[in-house]
Amino acid sequence: MAKKTAKTKRPEPTLEVRFVAPGLAPEKIPLRAVSDVLAAVQDLASGRDPFETPHVPPEKSIGLVDVRRGSAIYRCVARAPEEALSNLGRIGSLLMSENGYGDDGDKLAAALGSIHDLSAVAKQVGCRLEVAIAGVRKEPLVVIQAEDYQRLSKRLLLAGETTVTGEVERVGGVTGLRCALRVPGRHRILYCDVKDRSLARRLGEHLYEDIVALGEAKWIYRSWRIYKFTINDFNQPRIGDSASAIENLRRAGLSAWDQIRNPEGYIREFRS
Image 1 (cartoon, helix red, strand yellow):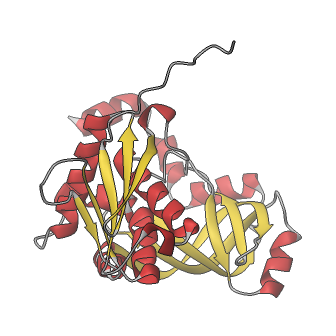
Image 2: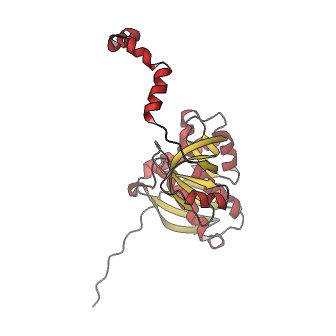
Image 3: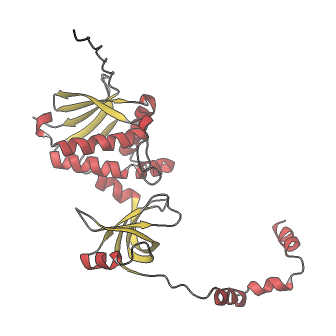
């Protein structure tokens, strides 16, 4: 006789992700759109900074526990519920702010990738997206419309031409031409768009070599972190003679230290 297995109790949901539009139902929404939205909400709930942390830690993840009709409602449980709701509430308040973002602007800038994905799905499906506390009749914590990413990017991103030095890690891509650069002082690889296929082929000839990439960048306001970079051309850095470089520095004024008998005492006196 087969043993009866104990039923696992379904956890109580922490939050609801809603696709809101007249006549919308779960079966009308592409699975890829649902996946993109849930992944973006998970990033926002965890407070992940994509410039520092490549993945959401398991202890901060969320999981889907139920799907309901009435538009399309996806109920999720968070492993760190208080932190998740706090992070979502902060992002929601910043999205509604009309008076600037102050010191929290960097947090909203770190969330731009998730907001981009959510806005894209809202535009694709023709809806607005809401994230709310499950089972609580209050205003949603976060509301995303199709135009929100464009509105925020105009306020948070600065554009211009620049150069970036780094080591070529990978070149290629399925949906678009991209080059992965390992940039000194940056924790994560910088994924760059590439202007055209001929340039991508040239880059591919310099794998694991240092290059100086010339192109157009978008920086995050105040922190000056590169949010996006498009390579229009590149060259390789020229390595000169170190002895000649030191001699040139001495000629520029560093040789004046030779005339000071006690440099340490001079520096202490200067600082005081």
